[in-house]
Length: 186
Image (tube, rainbow, N blue to C red; front, side, top):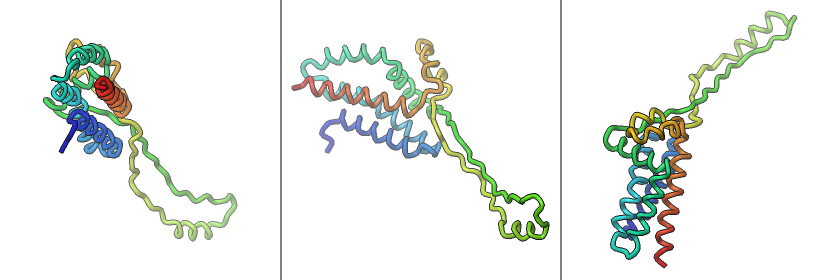
């Protein structure tokens, strides 16, 4: 049985962030984990409000935190990304990839005999395999598409922003928020 719904949801967001890192090379799996992450991360404060609304002092403390959260661009962005994910579809991301290409070569010394070259080429039959790309970075793309008119000012801040780094910042803030409320209780 889940003892603390707020902490459970925060742990789910951390799990989804871990899944994003694990699925980093796979576009589809990464998209699934990102959608799940924004849903869980955005739900932390909903669950916190529901769980603690009757606790003395929570309303006043939380009101001050709402004012703080609205000033943090990555939390405002989280809200818009979650709404886009829930109501319109996957969050657009881009990826920076590298492809390593290699080829075997036989170097022939100048003046070598043509007869010896053929035997070396026959021994070294080329193996051609298609290159495999490696994802180096994932970033938010086309963010103005899912920001409201008033939040379009955030578009340059998040266009091409690293998805993992932004998600880690969100988790770090939410972790501190939950810990702060728990510390207020004692």
